[in-house]
Image (cartoon, rainbow, N blue to C red; front, top):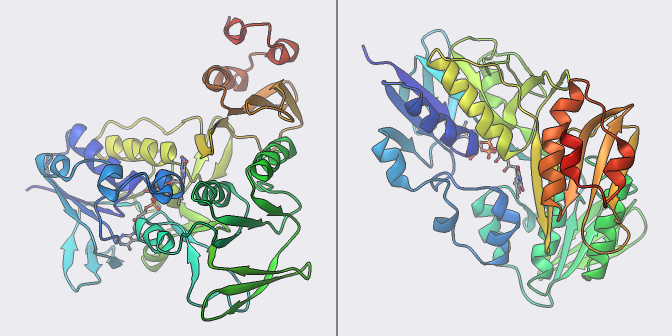
Length: 409
Ligand code: FAD
């Protein structure tokens, strides 16, 4: 009898899992169910080209809809899975239908953390996670209009750059003492503060919104520094929460994400979890974590699909990520947390291109490269070697007269 694999969540992880299952030889039915009304699309452009107005939704689809049809994948957009019954292997759709699975993949991703202050829930406070969110934001973009962004992480800063490109007057509030504090080193924060300031963005650090007042024409943001800001557009980007609701309801092991093993299997061996929602182990760094990145979502999708088809290889990828702001392409390889020294190649305090190499003791653990594709590529090859014991010459790394590829020898 033909078997059925159901995938819940139709974005980077879910879409890749469906395609990879077919490519790995799954001959049964594949059902890909997504709560969003549109077919799976690239999420990173939402804060970049899509917000800037350069792209329509059809131009950012992950795959043409015909690809799912020709792979015999039953794509069901605009439908939410309400709950699971693991005993009878059933999923219950919000619309009332029930489907049976043999294997189930949870690719439910994450949703924005809400602003936990008075007025944080008034209409007009906007979040940026989905294409629908961005369409609503775009309606409020006007040259000369006042935009306030709460949260100085990558998404907040990309949004600031995209709104400046449309001549909005932009202020970013960051409650920590520096932007990007939770994700990177002071040298990167200093660089991005300088660039955004040069581009005309007002950056307020150590500044937390304490309440929001809504008016007929806009909003007022009151802060802990006695500053009040009037805004025509207010966007909150203060992080995301993994969407573990149906996993919890079904009694799967859940912490800060759905707990999975090296094959992306949950505590129920017939149920897998992949992408932003998966709490997993990274053997290169020997830590447990959740990653919010496209490469992680697609790589875990391939791992789960291969394992379901009996060809499992443990997930052991080097994390990588990127961020585009103005003409700056930041590429990140590895995990920098726990670093104790940074080696710079180039000068972050002037110009728009440099690389920061992160070391723990003598071990190279990560690189942040701004407009430096070679540093990124070679760093990405050096880090796994370094994690296995190769010593990287720090002096050579900092010396721009020494070709980086010499370090690979
Ligand atoms: P998601 O993309 O979150 O998708 C999960 C899907 O599951 C959603 O469509 C949701 O509606 C659906 N879902 C949830 N519960 C249910 C349910 N019960 N029933 C049905 N459907 C359900 N990463 C990078 O690597 N580089 C970048 O430059 C970058 N930029 C980004 C910019 C923005 C604005 C955002 C928001 C993210 C960015 N990311 C970037 C992160 C990246 O987009 C995510 O890591 C990636 O989308 C994770 O994919 P996913 O499939 O795991 O989850």
